[in-house]
Length: 156
Image 1 (tube, rainbow, N blue to C red):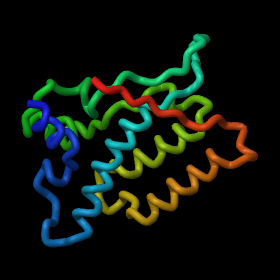
Image 2: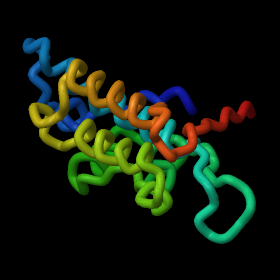
Image 3: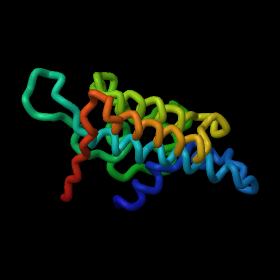
């Protein structure tokens, strides 16, 4: 059941371990930052970069949902709780993200801040917006020697 995976796969640790303060509105914002980090991870994994292995074709990872290598296709609540809360795991950041792409290196930092295990440490939406706008301006700057990031949309 793919729908169930989507829901569980994007659920923040504070919901999985039942520690979220549901009466405090900020908790929902912090939970959203965690889930948004997983979406950014998906975007990053589909961002083309020049080949690092000596090939001729730009590279990106094939599409996978977060935690694909850590769980079954239809994980249980307890399985996701074990992965995210008990073991503290997050989706693996591909090695190529630490390469010459300023976009992917910066995106890695943002993602790691947003999926921090302590909700109050995660950035606010306003801070995240300012960070992403700054990153966009850096990448799009006429003086930037960097190529524009390209994204691959694959329809199955």
